[in-house]
Length: 155
Image (cartoon, rainbow, N blue to C red; front, top):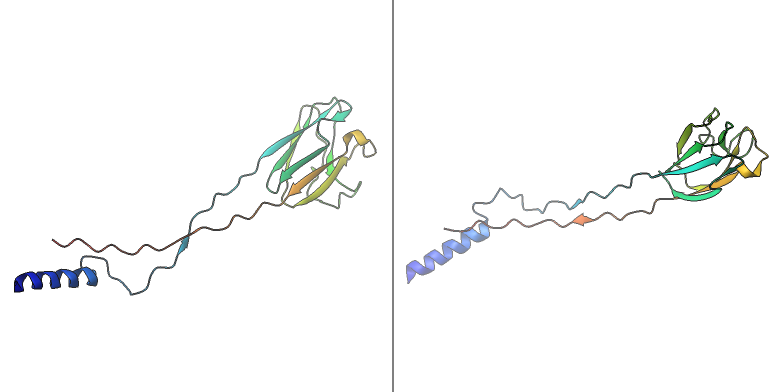
């Protein structure tokens, strides 16, 4: 009977002391955030056709791009308002015309409502529009709880 108690006492001592486990510092590891899914930008087409744009108003998200495609017989120059300075969003300006059959893409990095026009024909309302750029919704970080080490089985 004494042998049985001795074995039980030894087993309990080994189980609680973490025998066979890695060395413990007595503190739990800090929770680590899980990797969040990162949204990649989409590209939306906007086409210049003879006499008009196919889309005059579009809503996208920060990080998305608009590809200005020229299917017209004339060159076009998409740029932010106001004409001629394009000062509302100066980066939104190819600094040159987009010739027939060519395209130019711009990635929107700022949220806002960005009016644009054709720099080569600024008064023509058929080539004016607005791009609504919405901010990316914040994704809360997920934190993983630390896992307590499992005691090694006693043989």
